[in-house]
Structure formats: structure tokens, C-alpha cells
Image (cartoon, rainbow, N blue to C red):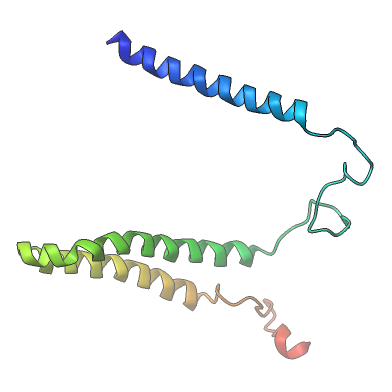
Length: 136
């Protein structure tokens, strides 16, 4: 039993040793000539402007969250579709189809909810009823 723990410890030690060796070798080999331009933060080749502490529009997070939900849906659906033909051959096709439709239905209800709340629109009107798209 202790042999299994020894294997884990040996691999951890080798991992740390290899990482330390690579970092040390890189430190010895790479050139060291710091300049003011090299020590600035890199921002797509452009000089940094403004503060890094800015507020993003909350709609960005909502749209990103909806994208992630449907991206994960596709990640779950692909393996199911890969074995669905075998389930039909085993006689479990109808039950699997029902589960798939229930899964997609729950996600569709979520999409309808988000759509009805108009959270997928990037530009919304204010609480006073002004539509900023027409005002601009």
C-alpha cells in the first residue's frame, strides 16, 4: 500500500525538479537587458491608456453567460448523438429521445425567458421609456 504513495511522491518530486530545472535553465540562457519600454505592460502593441479598473456593461456578462450555457449544451449533446444509434438498437431509443427533448426543452424555456426580459439586446431603453437607438 505504501508503494502507491511512494509512486505519487516520486512523480511529484520529479515534476517539481523538472520545473525548477527548466526555469533555472531559462534564467541562465535568456538575455537580461531591461529597458523602460520592455518593462511596460503589453497591450496589443499599443501604449496603455486609462485605468485598468473600468466597469464593463452588465449586458456583456449576461450575453456571455447565455453563450456558455448553450456551448455546454452542445458539449453534452455531441456524445449522446454519437451513441444514440446504439441505444435505438438496444431498445432504449425512445427513452433517450425523451430525455434529450426534456434537456433541450429546459434550455429553450431559459432562452425564451431571457429573450422575453430583453436581456439579449445590447442597447436597451431607459426606465423612462426613451429608446436610445432612436435618440442617437
